[in-house]
Length: 231
Image 1 (cartoon, rainbow, N blue to C red):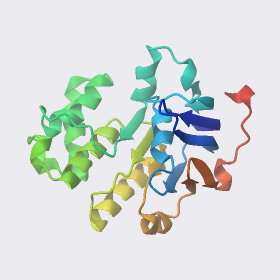
Image 2 (image 1 turned 90 degrees about the horizontal axis):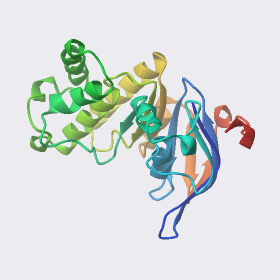
Image 3 (image 1 turned 60 degrees about the vertical axis):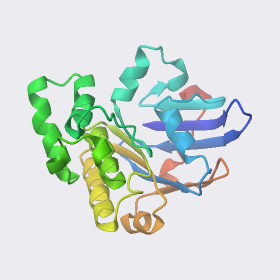
Image 4 (image 1 turned 90 degrees about the vertical axis):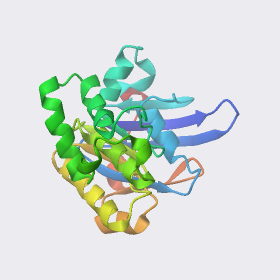
C-alpha cells in the first residue's frame, strides 16, 4: 500500500527533512510512526498524500508512483486517503456536520446517504450533539475529533494521521484508537504518527521509529525489498 525507497526530502531552505528513508506498509497493515519532534514524521505523511515530492528516491501509494501523477490524478489519489492533520484544517464558515459531510460530497456519495453516515460517525467520536455548531465554538480536543470524523467518514482504504489524539484525554484517546483498530480490522491500512508511547506499546502494533530524518527501527513486516524496478 505504501512504499518508500531511499527517499530524501530537501526543502528550498536547504534543510534535509528525510535522508534515505525506505520502508513498506503492506495493504491492510497497522503501523505507528514515532520519533522526537523534527524527526521527519510529518514529512513522510506529506509525501504520501503528495503535498510534497521527494528530492530523491521513490514513493508509491496504492500502486501509484506519486511523482508520475498528472494533475487530474492527484485528487483521485487523495480521495482514497483519510488524512488527519495535526492542525485540523477545518472550515470555520461551516458547521461541524457540514465539515464532515463535505468529505462525502467530494467523494461523490449519493446525497441521501450522507446525513445518516455523518451522524453515525459524529456519534462515535462523541460529537453528535455538537454537529450544528461552528468548529470555532468547540474546544481543541473537540475540533480534533471533528477532523478525525471527516477523515474516516468515507471509510477510506488508507488512513494516515498526524498525532490524532494529541489533544484528547486518555479515555477518549483510547476510544479513538479503538475506532482505528476497528477500521483496520475491516480492511483499512493505517499509519499513525504518535508521541503516546505508552498507548502505542499497549496496542502492540508494529512501530517505525525515526530520528533526524532517518529510520532508526524498522519492524520485520516493513522490510519488503524495494528496487527501483518496483517503483
